[in-house]
Length: 303
View 1 (cartoon, rainbow, N blue to C red):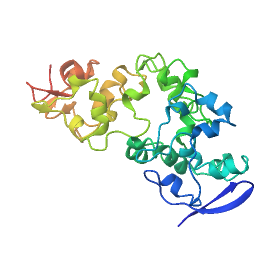
View 2: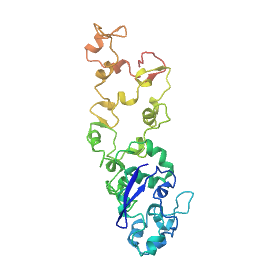
View 3: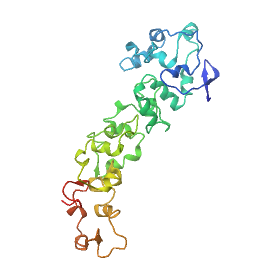
View 4: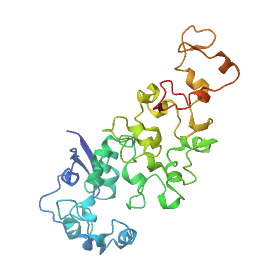
């Protein structure tokens, strides 16, 4: 069993940490059994500034939202039972700031997931889990201990919020051909679930994400393009932005020739057919083979 060192009421405590599920976030602290939950009204008698912070948020103490299956609500769902803290005139005996700062990123996520249980499976299989990011880093305007990112309300759209951390995508969104995320015409959440990854149950999560909008590319087709059925969309397209039309990873003919060539061919023989006149005169593969995702009428995907 791993142990977490927590500072509570000025004392260094060694508290066993157990993997949390449901409401076991609080159970993991092994708090004394005689402590009782007093309700957030008692907390706000002293911590009125916290009440003001949450007043107009989903976590407002007035809503008294409880951990599912329990009567533990609002402040005490994160800070634990308040009876001993109150009896000692606010001197320790609570899961306080120092204790919360000592939690790992996963432990902080577990604190949130005890209520937001519907996100538990998604989070643990998603891209942010284990990356040093926890819920409060993005939802700084929803929790009073803040996080790394500025609140979403500070930005014009979701894309601008996300690139605070994902700054490697900024240059892609400024390419000549791009998904217009920074312009607000599409949002990161249209393709990415920030709490989870691509659909793990889908036959191909990336392709199914793309075909939500590009349904005409989904098929099924009588004649399938193997590059579509055996790969995902990113084999040919850069989803954020590209120097090439249709977000292609390379210029059209160069892209096609990565797969469609015959070793040792002469005279531009491709698939047993001469292509020298076409390709030698700067023709493009898609001038003839325009149905690149699949066709219902021609096995060679010609127009």
